[in-house]
Image 1 (tube, protein in one colour):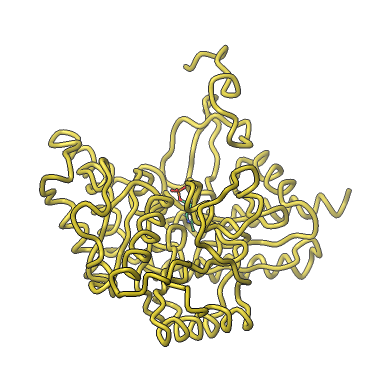
Image 2: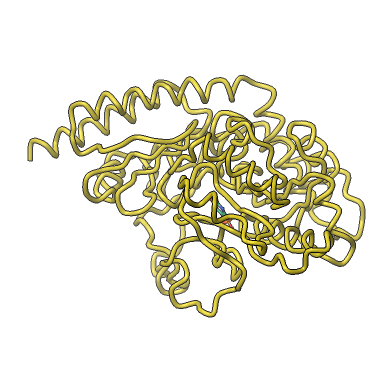
Length: 397
Ligand SMILES: *Cc1c(COP(=O)(O)O)cnc(C)c1O
């Protein structure tokens, strides 16, 4: 048992508005708190535990690796890194991989790569990267600046220069991408933190075309959408476009911290010894978690089942929407689903919590539902049943 006299607000910096839940164990779709209460976890550690908590295959592989080698410097060759990079490139359109430890770091690396690429191509005047309003790219100095949300910037000026924000899914934006200074566009195909906003495929295709015509790199932030979350290994596969670079993290290690940048060879070539690095990036423990995660996803029917579960969940919520006007809109891709409400989303999140179900918000009015990809149809039905009871109670009040 933890020492009850130590309260998180005393010894931890106050960076999160935390729920008063103290989680100590996870297995499959469930987590348990200190008192032994069991919760259906439809947050998946924010899209990190895509295979559920403590999946057998990854558990076994990481335990084996614990007995072999935890860490060694990137100044040595790390066979597991080569294996995971090969697995990622064989199952995508990319040629080379850089490993790091988080989503923000992956975006940092992608941004550095894009800047260096412009210089290497003899375009030193190209110093700007276009991102979009309501995006989220991380909390470091540079990825915070890349993030198109004022609330993330507040208090931290001066921001890293070189970012220009345009409206998401907006036709006019397409004309403003190329201004002679733009070296790259950085985009989420489904904006996660920013409200579960799905990019229109036609807009994405046009955006990609503008980039191609003007020698602008097309970077997709797949930190939240990658690793099967949307029903394909990577979300770009469903949009009919080929990015030059994608970034990964969250789901890549099933909860073990690991991030990655995947790039086409001509772009990746701009990283040379001395241009970028990370002490822990790609360490053997993280690589073993990543290897087994990707292999588990590719071996089974997990991806096909995500599409089936998406259909089921969407249909159920649309059915609820017909009876409860509180639900304004339902959107998402795969098992990254947002339910926009009339009024505060936090109320529904709290009510579900009282009924031992965990979900998140994405902005003030959107409930973000992130089941593990391995959730069952019975668990989905349990979730919908509880949601319906809450909505019914609200109406009766
Ligand atoms: C979570 C997230 C990040 C940041 O990842 P961290 O691991 O928290 O640094 C970046 N981009 C997107 C789209 C994310 O969802």
